[in-house]
Image (cartoon, rainbow, N blue to C red; front, side, top):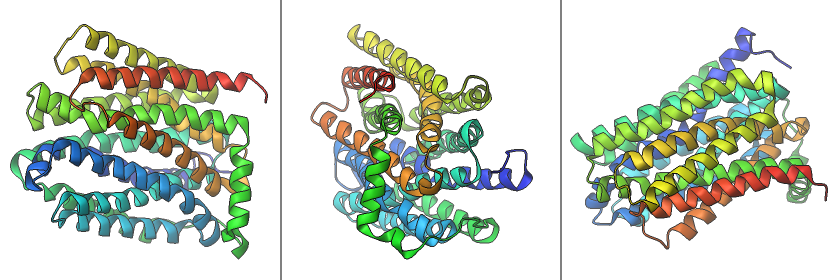
Length: 396
């Protein structure tokens, strides 16, 4: 196993961080432009928000096969395939004549996003163990958070000055550049698996073995409930802040970026704390912050405080906590599966993605421009994350 002080290992972690940027860029640059996308496609903001859910649906589907494919064919070739699909899907989305085609292209983009998330965790697990793995994952997510700060600023600027297609062209250019980086600078050290790796019966057997481990299930659920909070914020915050509170798209981009900055700060703090207090304590503290964020937003919503910061400030707290949970829940869940890290990464990302998709589907029946709906959802997701982490105390 490698140490982060190794120059080669650190270079790989940086590349993985760039790969992990695919997800934040896919949705964070898109969200501020949702109102003008709706106008451009003669649609509604609610319909455009479905394309955000489509990314996470595609991501949940994609997690099922990227891990096994990486275990069979190696990491590099699958990473390049992921980046190719992402680029093509972004270009297809830019040329969409209607909201239906855009939603389908975004679903395929989500499949590629899943590959970026699965492969970044898988390669990190190839190189590191225990708290060092948690620290590596924190660096990866720290870099992803940087892109999550820049992306909404670009999206807000694009929404004001450029055609809506510009956001998708930016995604295509970014992923093409990342493709070149991995082609030239990434060396795959993973030993390619046998053809048996892709036998459906063996894949199902391995997935059942992985998912039957209580600790794995607990960490997957905890991270999934926190991720669902982020997904709901992504799909509804533009309607609340731009449409209901009459905030301009570029100002919304700055507000959105501040939420991403909170996640960035959380990953920065978390990467330094994890080696001192351990993975599990990091996850527990993160869930506590998430619960405080959801509770404070619901309190302000019940008081009918209708200003943008009544949504944004509680999200700072929630996202700071999510930064503690996300990398460490993955690291803790993958730790027992050194020989099945690709498949295990697929399973945890599938579980977390499906939680987000299901919660998003339920919330879609309520008003997207109502802060109380967002606040109530965050509160209950925080409670669910708290209860799920408590499950680890019990033996079944």
